Length: 79
Image (cartoon, rainbow, N blue to C red; front, side, top):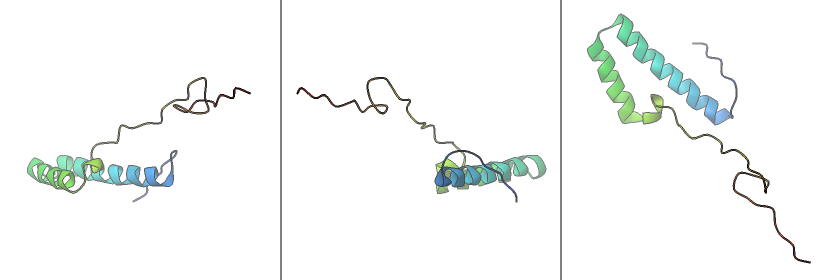
């Protein structure tokens, strides 16, 4: 199996590879084997780890003005 990933960190890439393999196994079962085995495999994947089939929706919060990051603000000095 050859899978090419780009972007993100090492751990995010590992999770992307896991999800790609799980989804491809489900697609293979749906196309070449019967639907019952696909549903059984889907139940096993969901029981083991939901992130194998459902992507994590969390993304980086964008930076706002008035500070160095998304929530942090610049410090005030009254001297």
